Length: 86
Figure 1 (spheres, rainbow, N blue to C red):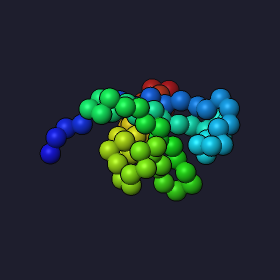
Figure 2: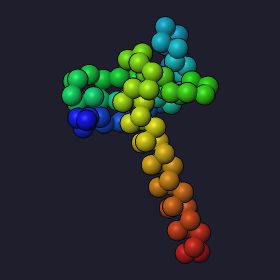
Figure 3: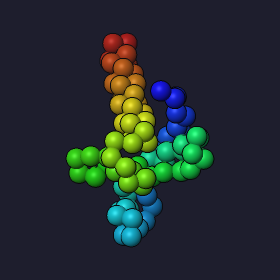
Figure 4: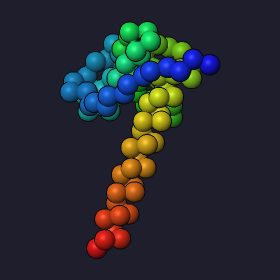
């Protein structure tokens, strides 16, 4: 299996974009797929991730999910360390 190189950048929409189903203040993730040399938009929609590539369970969604879970874990660990030191 070939390793894919995907970079994730979180952002917040500053305005509504109804054509794309994006609302102002919605959290989005830009997924740069280095192998495809393309940028994809990944967003959370009620109970699942949706990617602009329109493929279910794509590598962009997997990379975004991993990114989010890693950040949450880091923030949780930092909060625990802060509590332990006080």
